[in-house]
Length: 270
Length: 173
Image (cartoon, rainbow over the protein chains, first blue to last red):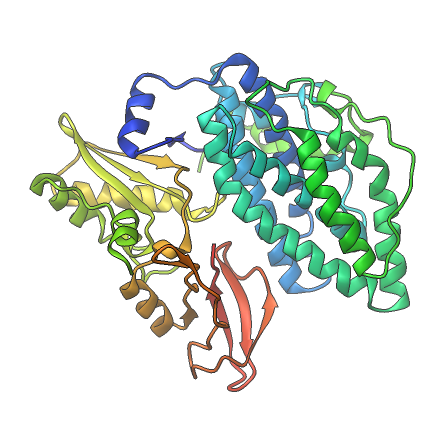
């Protein structure tokens, strides 16, 4: 993550963008806090998906999960660059030089990758969420967030297709694939509630309406699960608290791996 | 390609000076698909003068596209070689790139290179029902998608059921 480029959005034309940049586009403090949470969600899941490279069930899936992670990393870079503009911090400052309690990702994104069934279950849940979220954000009153969302919404639609394809294949496949796909859904389900719990950094008019996101999600995910011959789990909600900086123990290990190089060699470039 | 879509996809400046700069930058090729220029792709969004410097705006095909940094460096180098040492590249995310911006020439070159070009999603404002992807080697539509994701974020992996050759498809986005 090192982008010397100006990563700004423009609502109408490149000329308007240039004027914004010259005038010193900065995120509003409240908008920055909201963008930080979204950026952390994307960054942390990108890091998790990267763990599948060279470990997925087949080569095509190494590439698919790696590419999905790359899209998410792109969203994270835009969101964190924008958030950081409010505090004079770069995307790298935010990614590499914050500790666990300073991260604002919801816990579903940080959970260990588990087996392929768990990863696909999470991808289904979060890709449907992302699609609704970014669709909502294309209408945000904040033009930079709207621009980032207009790009992201098309990409996460592909991520959702990928997850739906696998749910069907595994759910309707062998007894073993069915069992493990169901186990993956059961394990991810307690974390669904947190995804739709109110964002403490929400900014009226700017942030996505999570009830609308939930309504869209409700139209997609249960049908995909039932269509694959699987059962929609019922499970008490996990404690959550990711947006307040409360995280799973495994999150520290993720950060250690993600941050060690930048912290051992501050300012290193190649 | 309609005139309106073509003007959106390749907004070459009106003034002779800026148009000449556009033509220099438009020769830069995509490092991942070197038969396509950034103008063919629709990735080149603007070229303008700002005092003594040249400001170029590009947009990524995908949010995480790692080619953006390489393309930016190549743009600056191309301008320097043409005698414009003071150049800057901005990256804009909106309006979001679409594969509908790829030029006819680009589609032809892509197919010749062995990559099935993206299907048009909108023609003259009308959303089209896409034909299947055609094998770039034998032209058959009897093909099978192997993976939504290929060697780069912008490509999917297919195999032709007729000539048995695997091939990349530049995804419709």
